[in-house]
Length: 365
Image (tube, rainbow, N blue to C red):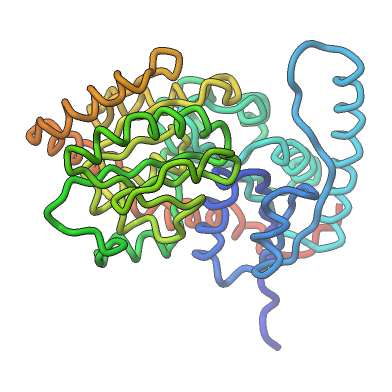
């Protein structure tokens, strides 16, 4: 009789920063039977069901001071832990992989209460609250940034980088023309994130006419929540809410202007793209500022806090960098040095090492 495949539950929810690394790692584990744990009405309900069976629990995050909201959250957490325990037992899963966030809490607690391995990946330089609280419970903690290890038990930590989708790696390995942009013109690529991009988008649009006048092309990913996205029209200003095929654009770009989410920074490192980083100031615990600081410390990016930014300052900084080709080349090389292209394979290997001793045998606890 054929062997029953080892069953793995992946808990990843909410944003692309949590989901895409988990999906990239899942691609490297074809020998496992993978199912997914998420939250209703989040991004995973659109991305996951076409690939893996999706289970959902309701769980939120602790924000602010103790109060009735905290009591509700504790009740919600207890209920979700029981649901995940039941799922793990009935499905005879061998263990859990999670990429952090609120969904990681019930996944880790339920797995460890059943004696199952829990593998946690933390992509940010400043680990999230759940990672800091529950990493001692985990079998292994994989990190996107070396800087994160200073906040966690070092014996469990392994730096693997942040997994990036295979399509992006393939596109980066085989460069091709980007949107028909001429090869002899300077190109700025602006990456507005799904959260909080409107303020940056507004400043970029104010600065763009001067760039266009100087012969610079601008590709602007605005995100879906920008009410003024269509307010600037020019044949050398190319705008979309999202560009699916971002790798050729970043490879072609002379400079990127971006938020500092861990996933975006990983893509900038894989393509060796110098950047001006504007961390999202309302990210949980200001974690994007820590991510950006790691790139600045490596001389791979210039960081400008949003509070300090104006259209004139952005114009000046971009002009200064584009006029300083040796510095851009050094920034590009430094960004490339931060890349770990086989991150997904490394994380998949950690999953295998943690789960294979379990052997996928039924959980009898």
